[in-house]
Length: 119
Image 1 (cartoon, rainbow, N blue to C red):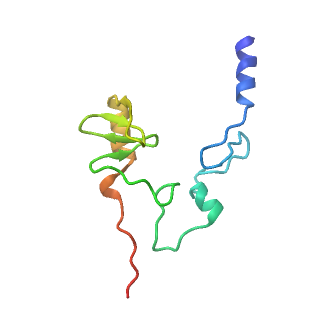
Image 2 (image 1 turned 135 degrees about the vertical axis):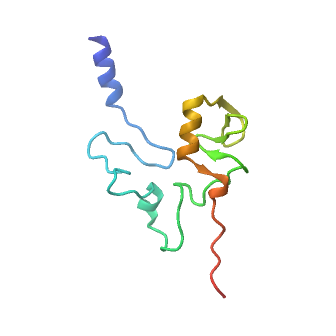
Image 3 (image 1 turned 90 degrees about the horizontal axis):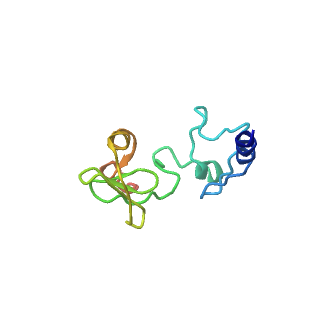
């Protein structure tokens, strides 16, 4: 009984993400499959069609060469080390996390060159 009431208390809490997005357990419409915009796009509007926004942070963080942005830091697949965005050690990736990052996350070479309008 104690565990059940503890869980109910925890589940009724409020959570606000770093960008100001407030989590709602009911009627959650953020990134739900119908609306795939980032929260900053919801707040500030979409960019023109020829300018893409790849992350919620705009402009996105510069990813070190050969690394991936895995959400809480950068991942180096050669060393299998994840560091935070200030380049401090976080953890070593196991095989599952390595595969997920390689398959899912944005890599340094995926960054686009700054848009330059024609003169």
